[in-house]
Image 1 (cartoon, each protein chain N blue to C red):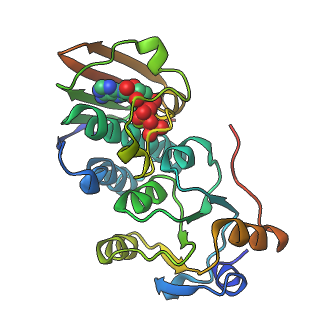
Image 2: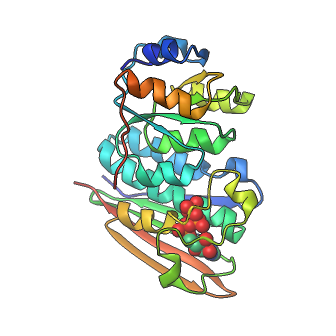
Length: 140
Length: 116
Ligand SMILES: Nc1ncnc2c1ncn2[C@@H]1O[C@H](COP(=O)(O)OP(=O)(O)OP(=O)(O)O)[C@@H](O)[C@H]1O
Ligand SMILES: [Mg+2]
């Protein structure tokens, strides 16, 4: 199989549409016949990342590459960056405002959950510049 | 437990995908926090929630859930119903509040599908 590349622009001003990219990737992986457990890991990780982009960073870009052996996701935003990454990775840490909590998010579970569901996980972040998540899920 | 059993136990109204009421659900999860659903639910479960926005459907989609139950008389919007139909998800509405709805399902044998 040749590798497949997908690109998504995630708008930062439309909470209701957040998750559309993850939804599309999920559909594509299903069509390709990828194992359900792999699809689930990719879906949860990417959706958490996509939501973070929208609620914390004003949107961004997502690139997905599907190869025979792995699914590579790159989520890049030009948001405020993460000041203390170690703290942000802790379960329960969140800077989300109350209006986000009313929408069902902001428990501080996203980043640790992304780490849990991916085989490779790296964050590049710089205050005032932005945040990029590099994620990989292996296909076996 | 079948979705049709859930519907009877909760005296719920079927909002969409009535043709899929015979599907089995292995577990259930009750939460208004989608973050927690994403982080704690393991099994393909039914979701009970009082939250109404499209991310409820998205969360259920990512978790491979087939059934969303809105509690305390909450009703999904039209675009949410369209999304659910598109994804083969049953939507139910019950007047019961969260605690009572979960308690009834639990006492009939349905269990939580969560854990780290
Ligand atoms: N893309 C991002 N840009 C800027 N800050 C971010 C970004 N992603 C995460 N953060 C920061 O890291 C914190 C923890 O993120 P995490 O996803 O774990 O929790 P949350 O988004 O606040 O809540 P939840 O994911 O449970 O809905 C956030 O509250 C925010 O301060
Ligand atoms: Mg998050």
